[in-house]
Image (cartoon, rainbow, N blue to C red; front, side, top):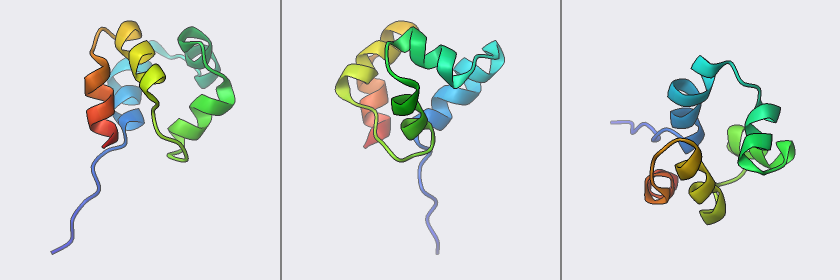
Length: 73
């Protein structure tokens, strides 16, 4: 029996929150106060969401930091 990998937090963020708003990675990075390079690494699953970014995401998308960190695990 094969096991599927859980969705990366970015996948959860992209489809319901960012894609409908038609924002670019550059625009989202700017709004979150991170570099495009940092956000690009997260989008492409080369980096994890930090505690600080989890806080920023929770403020931007009316969630909790714990939500993002739990998905990261």
